[in-house]
Length: 277
Length: 294
Image 1 (cartoon, each protein chain N blue to C red):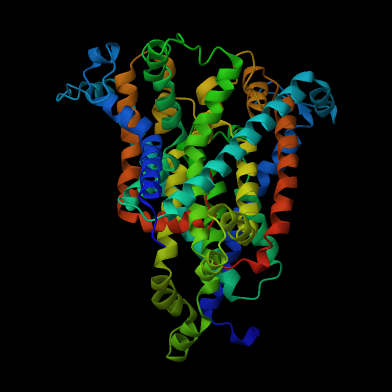
Image 2 (image 1 turned 90 degrees about the vertical axis):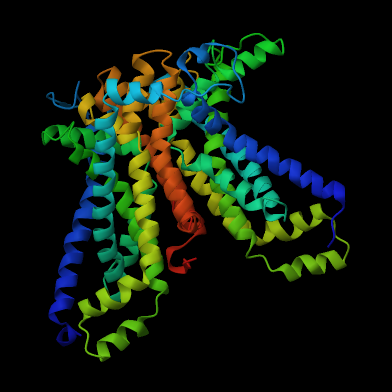
């Protein structure tokens, strides 16, 4: 089917519009973080004439606010969530697909159900529980709260993955003298790497981008995670747009880097319909 | 069966029991606790609470504010879902065409979905800032003055809707684009032989073939959009004059600003109930047993 020139031009124009629509707010955020602070008050230039090579906005952000500390908090929380999620969901998903467990459909069903819960409605009772346990305002509370969403997600994705993996492979390993655990470690885990990577990415994403749980559970500036820290900058000093844009860019950067290297897994997880947003 | 269980089987099963018990605890306890809280009146999460039975529900449901918030939630959800689905399908069809630079545009089209909600909110607030925002300055230049983005109720709703559509449309685009690849090409070729136009091909082949998938996408979007808290909170805080205050924001205000934990939990529990209805519908369309790993 050969298309006419007009049709092809129309497609190109539409694609350009889509690209612009998707990227412009991000472009404007990054550009504004790089321009000299004074010029943000002047006439907006779509292509900045001058770049602030001293990175004043970034310096102010990193030297004068709690941003570095909050960055570290976010990294700790996200990594803990990934580790816990992987451990728990690999075991649950594997056992559910390989053993006869009574009521396993109900278990998987309740996982999927739990995954759809809106964070705010979970955060209110969680705060009440953690307050009674004296754990409110601790990062552990945030990690556990993120796990209420990331474990169901992990179990659900890995369940589909393990189900599709033929049992013959492990059987062959066991016939050759591997124990069940040996077959699991030597055969199943290496083969399920793509699934494991996908789950890691999405639990990291879930934890790194979460605003609601840490907003409700954390009070003190020193324990805030990045999204909440950035949001409180928005409230506290007005019109420090350069610093705000620098902060927003720095939160986004790790995600874009991950996406560049692992976009295959992003798409896989997205199309498995298993990601929240 | 029992005699075949080896030590490693037992370890694995033991670990499984521990993991599943902890997970179910982590999921069920908050839900049950929310219901429990909704039956008591208390001023904060640590103060003494008194049993009031269903009184919290009674007064919450009797309030006009509740129904107003419910309506606002539905308006927000409907607007965002329709726009996301229509735009998402359009973008997917576009990205399915061959054109120069397609991989780049595909990558760019996903980016908004990766952004943390906070970043979306901050980026939009910067574009719409009352004196320095790019869009404010542009609208002044084309002579419509400086729109009061966050002070006008209709504009504020439009802003939260557009920001939400901007971030979450890529979900529909990518899912639909992946599904498009599963439609057999022979169907389109046959239609082409029969001289069916592009619109007829879309309406009589693509849509019917992808209907189950479309139902799932729409349900998932509804479940998530109906209870979106962060984007609205970060952009408008439910204002101006509660014009964008839907149930989650109302629940938050109740529990944290008006020191009424019971009332807030009652609203939260009612939202759970509405949501559960949607999830039951989801399971009907997409039963677990038939789920094929893709």
